Length: 116
Image (cartoon, rainbow, N blue to C red; front, side, top):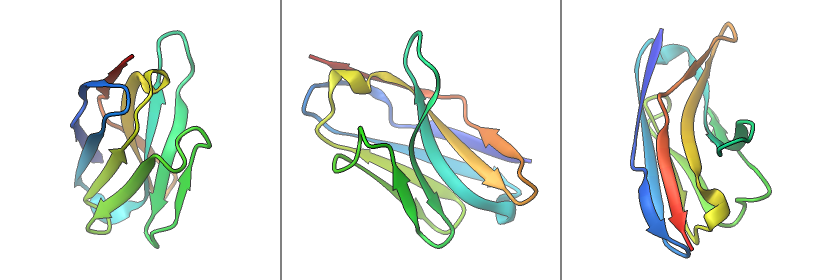
C-alpha cells in the first residue's frame, strides 16, 4: 500500500502561482511513476503532468510552459509548480502513483481555484 497526502491548494488570482506537493508513504520502493491529475466540476479527470523514476516528464498541452513537475527524492515527494494560472485551471488536483504490478493509488485531492 502507498498513502498519498497532497498540500498547497488554494485561491489565487489569474496570473498568479501555486505550488502543490504530494508526500508518499508506505511501500514507496514500489513506485515507478508519480503524477498529477485534475477534475473540474462536470468534467472527467484529466492528466496534468507525470514524472517517472528516470525523471522523464509528460505534460498536458494546456499546461506546457506554465506548470513544472518535479520530485524530491526518487519516490517520496512530487511537486507541481503552477505559474501564470488561468481560471480554466480551477479544479480539484489529485496526486497519483503507479507501482510495479500496475496498482494505482490516489490522494484525497486539493482544491485549486483561480479567480479572474
